[in-house]
Image (tube, rainbow, N blue to C red; front, side, top):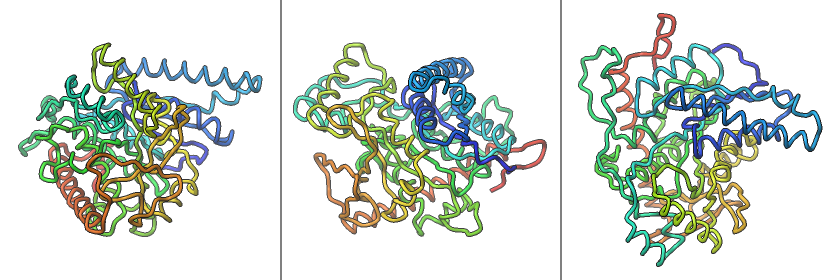
Length: 436
């Protein structure tokens, strides 16, 4: 990797054309300009699935930037002349359900040999075809906060798979191509492959931010169905899988697999010499991830506002509020985040709000794991909520979680190696660049 100035913070955000991804880009711009020294520049790489969406996203991000600059000028006339050059926006293309496009993006970025300081793995699909209106009505009337925090009335397209990965891409292979579950590939495996391929651009200071969910519950995931082929809650299954991967990333039991996935980039072959994996969630956000009729859209919007007003800490509702945890994970000084995780153990960082919608970052309990290293310890700044069916973590549950994490890492690595054999190495200028 070529020398790259420390005055540039380079961040890649996937799924940036709308919703949480777009809001993350906007808030990264705002928080960066407000908190970082004038000498620093933000190089923001935002991904979309096609060029048309990329062009529109660039237009919208520039509109947001101009509003931010106008507000800054109102406070300090002329300051925009100093602020505007500090933001560099660049669109890249990738479809997280198509592994060849992921490989192409990795090749593009590797060829530049520019350091990556942070990534936000936001892109994803829900796999929902609608909602069961009768069940939704009953659940909301009998338990509004639980129903809107852990919804079970959404209808999943069970068994959805991606289109064939290798057809039409000129890849020479002798291995049969098995199906890939669509939600799994988009939400987890695509990002997993991209992380591995981009490892040469990362340093021990690089932050890999995964977006999870409040609904990533134990009973949503089946270890014998890693990809969620048979799951009636494939989205929630993918988010529980994300929790298992990130929370066990640093454990000794997973290191035989982690070392192959993300080799150490420092002098010592341990977790301190690898990029940092950080787990976040946005709370409950009203986005277009599931298509609803106008009536159901506004009915759901009313329900989640009421849930906030009666005391739910997770109903952030807007994407700009919800993305706070992910932006915090990228920009927070080490003493506010990484040192905290070193001291109290790895945690799940969520965006919380009060009844007035004032957002803040709060640790969230991961069921089966807890809040951090010590069972029963609730670190300062955490938000504790309980749901119907909640079980307080025990030593046995923690051991089961860690063993599940180890198995998940082993199976994900096996799947990665299988697909790399089919896809082939990444070559740059005729030379093999990635061989891990």
